[in-house]
Amino acid sequence: MARASTTSDAFNAVAEPRRRQILDALAGGEHSVGELAQRLRVAQPVVSKHLRVLRDVNLVARRDQGRRRLYRLNGAALRPIHEWLRRYEESWSGAFDRMEMVLQTLEAQEELQHGQGAETQGSGHAAQR
Amino acid sequence: MARASTTSDAFNAVAEPRRRQILDALAGGEHSVGELAQRLRVAQPVVSKHLRVLRDVNLVARRDQGRRRLYRLNGAALRPIHEWLRRYEESWSGAFDRMEMVLQTLEAQEELQHGQGAETQGSGHAAQR
DNA sequence: TTGACACGTGCCGATATAGGCATGTAATCT
DNA sequence: AGATTACATGCCTATATCGGCACGTGTCAA
Image (cartoon, rainbow over all chains, first blue to last red; front, side, top):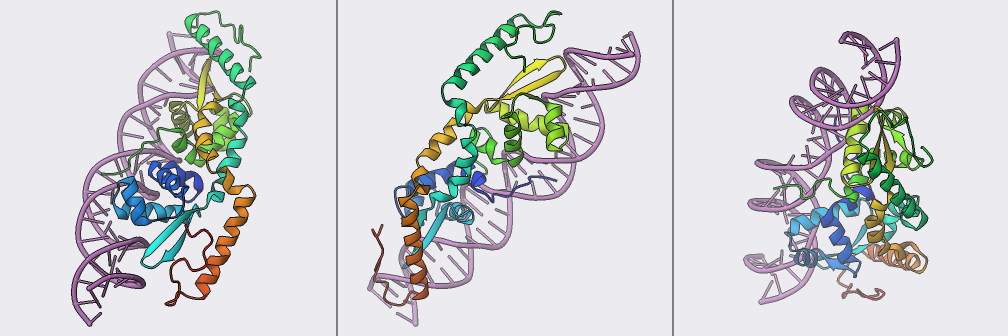
């Protein structure tokens, strides 16, 4: 078998750089497909397809204006990602950072001592696990 | 040509559900490959491969303990995502939400009136752009 | 009405995985 | 030393895109 999830959720939609660019552009307000294509320097079909994906996951909404289709951002759809990320925020806020530093330092030293029979199992490891 | 970006950044790494599960598991502390495989109910090679990707983008760090490899989370690597997301946070915090609601309501009504010659261009749209 | 626009899609080729299976390697056990 | 355990990889198959190109449809201009 293969790839489990289709590009069917915000995580996947946002994983594509070009798609992020589109969202960034739309963050500045509504834009038509042509405008986006010109701005990102890509062919119109490409933009249309990415917008299709973004629309499927509800990241953008469409509005018709004559023969143009105006797309606008729906940031709310990014919330799941933000929520998931929230769990890890502590990782880059102060104390945690410093602990990381310490761990990496210890590791480096360990690497230097190059194994050896010693390493009686967690010899000098802080908190051992 | 084809696919532009390889799974070489945090965005892509996290786009895969199984990979998120692994990170979630590691959020609880260091774990060996075997432990993770058992916990996620998947074959060991699968876990090893995902860990490989996570390691390449620096989302996890490895430490050797005998014949086991203990992986631990490096949440800091998620920061870029968080940073990118920060720009859209306002989207789901109060005022913006309400505005979205209003816009969608207007749209619904527009849909009802079914185009028609009227729609003189942004007839009753708030902020028109 | 005819022609120019603005889009959305389908089809195609090249490429990037995800997971299954088997194998190679290093460390631990007997 | 030989067997066993814990992993990392390579190879293979099925599948999912990404971008390019051509085309069909709806809308606006003459």
